[in-house]
Length: 398
Image 1 (cartoon, helix red, strand yellow):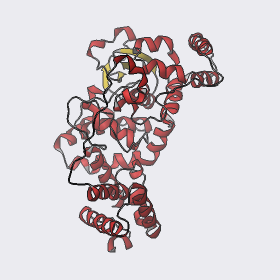
Image 2 (image 1 turned 90 degrees about the vertical axis):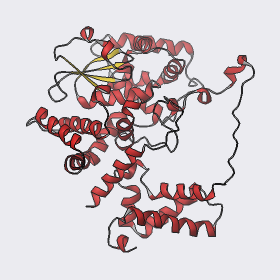
Image 3 (image 1 turned 180 degrees about the vertical axis):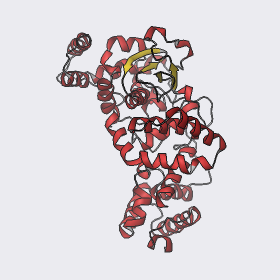
Image 4 (image 1 turned 60 degrees about the vertical axis):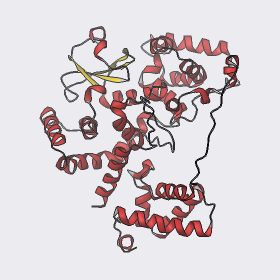
């Protein structure tokens, strides 16, 4: 209480103790309290201490949702209510293989496929549409892609009205090469954004740039003033990037530095996300066997800082060969994971989840987007990502 009354952030030990006290009182008054009630109680606490708890629960970085006091209350309630006898959950078995179609597609899909999506599988065509009209629109989009003076609003309308067929093609497992041939607009900024908005409810590039304005400067400040003092390897990476960047300044260069520093902070390899080629390299000259299967940004130049052109590779197919900005390339790469049911590679698990939560505002309460390489159960929130979010929130209070 002393900390909160003075507008200061309580130490972690005090925060945990506060959660235990609050939950104990809640359970005495309402033994069957659940998630919704815990959220309501937390909101009332916010109203009582607006200047301190509001930042703790709903701050800009904390807007990702998982540092919050609300989450701690929920977890504590679940721990207290957990019985000592484990519950046995029986897996549903399908005895007749011919009845597979009776199982909803969402239940057959991998958790990583539907993670973060609000309209992953569209069961029915729009009332005004038929299979024939969808095919006609798909063919029209192909023709328009070859034209130089296409109307962006018409493209947007056609992509949105054929969303049903696009999802059917992806969820049926059509290859990236086939999707690129049938839906060429899907792989440029406009088409990717339209589909991503329908799929997740989030504006791809607009959300990223808005969060960049809110959180980018603070993140860079933390990485370049606090994180550098904690790791010699990270300090060496920062020094190398400064030499590569030189006197250049601007938002785009800050984003490049932010992403490269995040990769180093999480000890993840740059080449898993970015591959540099000669600045004059043509699309058919890229040695795709060296490129990861997952969405990868091809940097045309010696470094991100010197490059003025980027490409995007998915499944070792160059799906976009003339991307003019790093921010556009980053958004296309990230959107591809969701639009095409691609799991985060374990090599980039922390960096991608941090970008997802803090810059693309995708915060599912359950599940993970990371590939499952073994039977080890993954937490809903990557502990390393959560630690960085907490450190950033603490950094704000200084």
